[in-house]
Image (cartoon, rainbow, N blue to C red; front, top):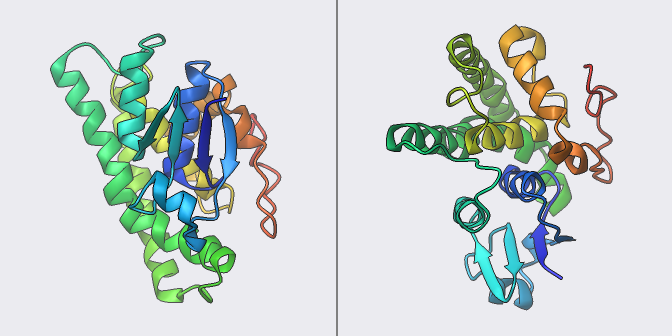
Length: 221
């Protein structure tokens, strides 16, 4: 059985889970306590990071490498456009979320409020939480502007860029840190992607000690 080693609220793990589900590739989900740095875990990925995909004898690490492997190995349904300029825009937006958004928002909100407690690293740093709460406003406004001119974030078709964005935003939505009333276009986009069958397992996630808000799994939020 193919296996994905993950943690439920990791946006990088969620991105891979969305791609697997969209392409209807079945895997067994194995939660990994990465902070304990078990020997088997470090053998799978010496970098000590998740996700890790064990797939048909291969051990694949780093979310973007995994997603592109899956896209090349299972091209239907396509999550990357055909044109080089369009593909570049998808990669730009994926990097936007996995680098800039992650540093400015996800790490300051999700990691401070949830990960520190789970891993026993102490209490949230209020300065980081405040910085994340301020930064997310800029990002939500930027995405809203993109969606004024585009059906999906990178263009007319749903792509890996949408899954990267949804992975981060859904993890933050689990802890009620996204103001969906800030932009109608963004809210409509999230409702559309949240309603896809690929999203079902994410909406069923439960993290002990952190119950999701009532709207989290509501498709008509």
